[in-house]
Amino acid sequence: MQLQLTSPLDMHLHLRQGDMLKTVAPLSAKTFAGALIMPNTVPPVDSKEALLAYKEEILNAVNNFTPYMTLFFKPDYNYEFLQSVKEDILAIKLYPAGITTNSEGGVESFDLKQLKPALEAMSELEIPLCIHGESGGFVMDREAEFIPVYKQLASAFPKLKIIMEHITTKEAAHALLEHENLYATITLHHLYITLDDVAGGLLQPHLFCKPIAKRPEDKEALLELALNANPKVMFGSDSAPHPKSKKEAPGCAAGVFTAPIALQLLAQLFEKHGKLDNLQDFVSGNAQKIYNIKPLEKTVILEKKESEIPKKYGEVVPFMAGQKIEWSIT
Ligand code: DOR
Ligand code: ZN
Image (cartoon, rainbow, N blue to C red):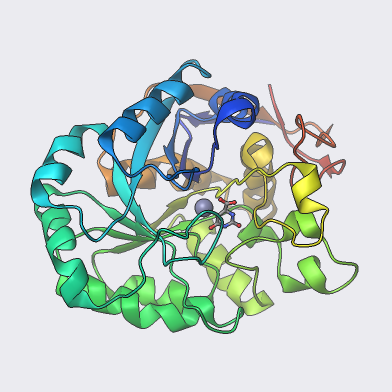
């Protein structure tokens, strides 16, 4: 059995810089037509110069792949600045300060008055806002606690497209449907694992990420949205490579590396649930509509043929390393 996908898109991807970028960017370009590139580099992508330099670094590492660039949200972005970068970005990514990897320069307060000028300008210029939506509370409750912020922003800026990044809870899955201008990305790993897989037995550092995987009923709520290709959701891998030495260590870095095997594992999942017909929309069609983009043409053919996930890509251990999967890329 074969499955043909047209122009798959990964609408949430970490490529890093330097040697790591040279290792991982071509792996995404092999099966995806484009990806939304996260700006939490060191230092973050928060100026036009940094943005253009980062785009060039990515383009030098790949062929036939569109890096849809993002800026790291700062409350002091003004209309003139945003207008000057509009053509170079697809979205702006907001991180609460210190909530995850390299987010120290993020937003300290969600006081609407402080955020209003930048968000109004984005709304007017039609620049979507992507949000890492977690509070500073207890780790299992962080996403649910952030939902009032999503709702407040969605109501205060009804023309602003807001993307709830990497949702992990049934609460987020419900909130998404309540506001016309809320959308969401869903990762591969949050469709496969719960907290039990991370910490229920021996601790699995390669499954540790932010937001942490939650309960079975949360995973079910995400599956319901993804498998039916609900038009409010799209695939965003949040593939976040860290070297093995930073994962298998005290103070394990957060991030799951899935980019090279994402489509194969999505095909396996959608087939298992009898929903293969919906995969095209989940991995491309929905994102095209939400972001109003026309990706470059790329045909990817998957085949139902067993393969084994490599133990490592360079210094990075992938999701389900060494395990057998039912689908391969031809
Ligand atoms: O697990 C994560 N890793 N979550 C994020 O939000 C950031 C990412 C990274 O950059 O490593
Ligand atoms: Zn991310």
